[in-house]
Image 1: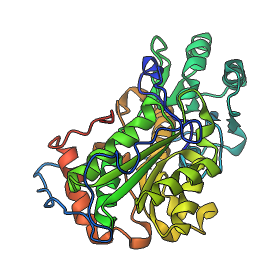
Image 2: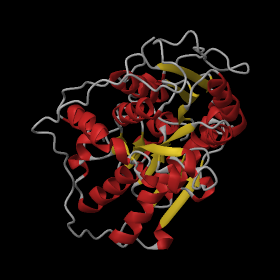
Image 3: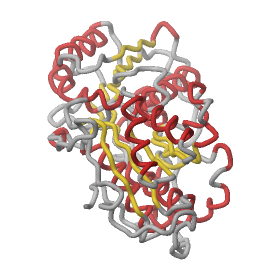
Length: 382
């Protein structure tokens, strides 16, 4: 995925991690909660939940909107366009906005962050976009929160937005935040159903409150489906070191360790490092679950798409498109406070048909969440 967000700016007080190859948290096979099952026997599964009567999701209308007067700036997180994950999802939303709203190519500008860059570089990037007349300007990732807190007040007539964070005291900054834990719950259910060993794994890029939401939902979903499932959990780097989102080799090492411990379905929330998780799963005869985008469709992952059973969809593309569309209509206040299952902004993919046989189960759990019958925690348990 990327170097993602916090929910509130104050929540970016990040927690530390223990080490994997010097820096990762490892619950270890024998230390994971749950007893698992005999290898190859699969999990003992709970019955499929009932579908509540009023569990419909909402969607926006197809009203034609003219955005030809807009100049849109998109400030990517590290990795930029082509990361096969978080940034690509944002890029897709911008591409859709340009096509459907009539935004001229010369009125779209993309800039990209560098790993562990100085805060002043982000401020300069955002300030330059504003000075050049771009409006709206969207920061992709919580790393832009501090910079927006400094820059946005300098341009009160410019609409800024930030994915994965809120910026207190800046009324011209619109937060685009997601219920990642809800969709992660659904792929956790899928992992439990597809695991032959009743033993699954989670690989996080950087141990931050944001990535912990993915872990929390995944673990809760897997245990809702199979209470005895065994779960491995590792982070590649501790909070503050964002290279965990850009190190496929470290992702590969973490995944190999989990496979060696017995996990046979792995879910990553590790940005570009997820490529290493996928390659380890393929070589280790395991299955994998993607994140943010439908990763089985990503051209640069074509060699591993056969082992990707589903992806947790975080529709950053929807949020970016909706934000640009709302600015064009001068209706920013109409955007949802949280992009969740109720507005179809998170979910799971079905590319390849590998979860078609359990789609009714996944949708039943989805309906329970939408109807508030299941509350998904955004903080991992022990």
